[in-house]
Image (cartoon, rainbow, N blue to C red; front, side):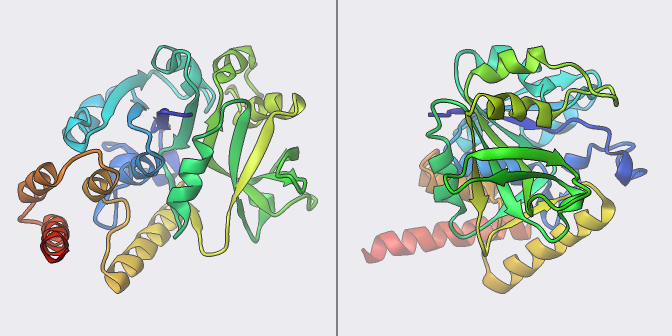
Length: 298
């Protein structure tokens, strides 16, 4: 069972400069909440409550203003500063003490996931006891992504970064589940030509040992990467459309914490009242009233 998760929120955000000169990309808004809320919500939906956020050097205070320690949400948030980007597998080297002897999930801080059956899918993947699991999503232009080819048992046969010839249309998303061997494997990696440790090299270590499986985000689910300005605004438009059409919020941490039984109704209402002057806070108060009405009517 995976009970620990890491959010890699480092990186320089150069593709979004000058917006990211003063503010970390993960703290910029996706519609009505910071981007960091979205990957954090995914870990919370997976019932992962012990979370490490890896941030750029000098940006720790910015994060702590928004997400101090997680106590108010019934979770535990800790931080590590990354002096400079060294590649995704560096998260497991930096987080070795945090991980300890546990298995761990990793999500990239700029990835967005959405889907009706996502919660059950996430919880199912936390039951991993041995090996690794990657999350895949079908794409139209696989040549733009790292892709994986799988067999009928969802075992990964091969992986290719931005293939020039078609191999698979299943892109590797920024959500991964690993057993504890990931620390050892990450330490064994050598930097690539671009001077960083590569996530493809890490998951290939599991594949070569026949210990790499995949789960696919099915039809109706969405995975969006907010790496560029265009992708950022596409994601904002997506969230805005869903929330304004259907009337509920995506990645509402307080609501998730309540429905996952991380906090009780009293604490939920306290969090709602703290934000009552905003439309976000009004939404929380509406949810609280709905819960109370349902309890009164039952």
